[in-house]
Length: 164
Image (cartoon, rainbow, N blue to C red; front, side, top):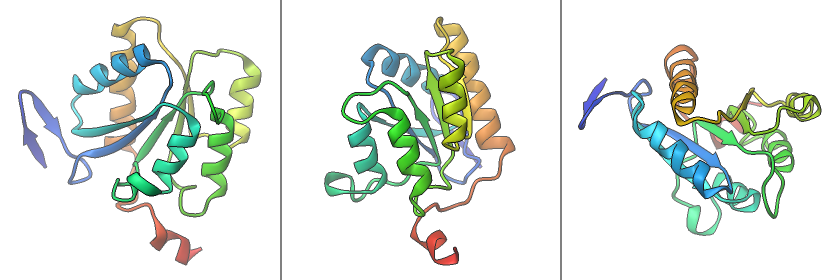
């Protein structure tokens, strides 16, 4: 399905892709948002500035009760209030959330961070690019892989927990 705005966008899910960026660095949020705006995939990018807010959004608590669950989560590791590793552990141990792909997007190249992320069942680990041009390339790769190559469930939520 094609949707038009000021650029050609693709809606591979039949609707805009729902993304959750969990990032506390305002500059990184702005750059990532800009990179996704320049992408080809129609998307809604929600942002959580710390791990506790991310979990409230994912569990659709309080003011997030009507917010759709994301199709993909981009997760920084070094977060205030609740570390990214704790967020990843909580997501992957919650039957209602565990099927949501989580891509760690971190500035850390440390082997221990990479290994620990995969041990906690991250679906991917990307080192944050240092230039905007490289970030645009990474975003394009994420969009291509996760929204045109991989088949995602149409709804990640309570109905999946009943099948388990």
